[in-house]
Each structure stands twice: as C-alpha cells, then as structure tokens.
Image (cartoon, rainbow, N blue to C red; front, side, top):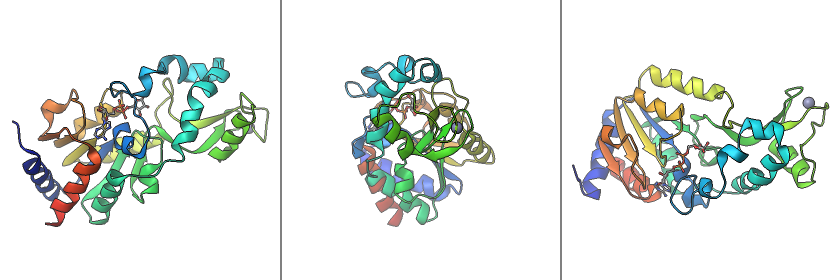
Length: 250
Ligand code: APR
Ligand code: ZN
C-alpha cells in the first residue's frame, strides 16, 4: 500500500505511541550521514571494494594479521573520529521521552553511545577497547592504534607475549554477550521494532526481527523483510527520524 510520506510519518508516530515495548535495530545506514560508508549501498558500500571474507575474518586475523590490519584497520581508525548525526540524536530523544526502550545496533562506531543513548546493545562489538588473545587483558583501543601505527603487526600485548585484537565481532567469531542479552530482552516482548539503515542480510542479527509483533523499516533500499512491515519509508533516516520526533510531540 503506497502511503505518502506525511501519512507514513504519522502512522509510525501512532504505532510508537501504541507500543510500550518499542525497540530500534540499527545498521550502517544510520551512520552514512556521519560520513561513515556502509557495506552494501550500490557504488559506495565498503564490501564493493574490499572482500570481507578475504580480509575481515578471525581466520585472516590469525593467519595473516598484516592483511587484516592493512585492509581493515584504517577504516576502524577513521570511524572513531566520526560524530553522531540527526538520526542518532532523534533516537536519544525518543529514549528520553520514554518511547524507545533500547537500541540493538550492528554498528561498531559508538555513535549511539556518543549521542547519549543509554540502553544500547552493540551486538557486533565496538571500537573503544581491544584485548589480548593470550592473557585476555583489556586495553583501550588507542593502545592498538599506537602499535599498528608504529608498524608493530601483529600488535603485541603490553603485558605478555600474546597478540592484541579489536573487541569487534568478526566473521567466524562467536556472537557477543550483548547479542544474547538483546535476544533475551526481545524474547520478553517487543511490540514494535523499527529497523533503521540495515539491509538485514547478516545473521544472526537479522533473525531478531522475528521477535517483533509489529515492524517499521526505514531504509534507502528494499529488504527481504519489507513484506512484513506495517510501514516502509524509503528515505534518508536523518530526516525521517527527525520528522517522527516532531510528529510524536504533536
Ligand atoms: N538512510 C536510510 N538508509 C540508508 C542510508 C540513509 N542515510 N544510508 C544507507 N542506507 C541503507 C542502505 O540502502 C543499506 O540497505 O542502509 C543499509 C545498510 O546496509 P549494510 O551496508 O548491509 O549494513 P548493515 O545492514 O549494518 O550490515 C550488517 O554486515 O559486514 C557486516 O558487520 C557488518 O554490521 C555489519 C553487518
Ligand atoms: Zn597478554
């Protein structure tokens, strides 16, 4: 059913007001307006230039750390400089106004955290810390950046003869504790899930949609779950979320 933009915004605001257990599921598309390219947008997606399975897996991290750190690490270092955009700020406002109960994010860029959102599950990890694969000691991410920038690859642990790695979930890793926590929370009830800026092609995170009694999707491209959504808005999420906050205040 084609609804014009205004009526879609009003429909989403009404759904949010009717849904005590309202969660957001965000992907890389919410951070493109902060200057961080996503993975699968035609023409600009990172995976169009770099093959994730040849560079960003646990296997490559262990067998060919030079490739892992050369191919993917500069992207990490750029990400930590980025600032939240209107979409992140709008979600924080929805949390402050008591609508949004939490955000499940696939993003490792910490932008929900920087925008001040409090209940955030970073299911693919984050770039604030790293850990040693030998003694498991955690260090700030800067320690890793310094060592890699200084050409120490693989980056040695400051404490033992082990090797450091970022606290992100790589292809081939087990899922983070945050993922299992988020799953438990959603299992207790999710009246409405708003998916923002995700192609919903990566599992097991895309599977979390099954807990949503009602679904709203805000995404520039179509997804395999559009058929299930009450409302699909195929516009840029910065504007859309700003307009939804305004509609909630009306
Ligand atoms: N507004 C709305 N949608 C947008 C915007 C925007 N400003 N910018 C991009 N998009 C949409 C794109 O059309 C795309 O469908 O966001 C979606 C982003 O999808 P992906 O690039 O696949 O990112 P994501 O779904 O988060 O990927 C999941 O894949 O490689 C792994 O670990 C990585 O967490 C990532 C996971
Ligand atoms: Zn160590």
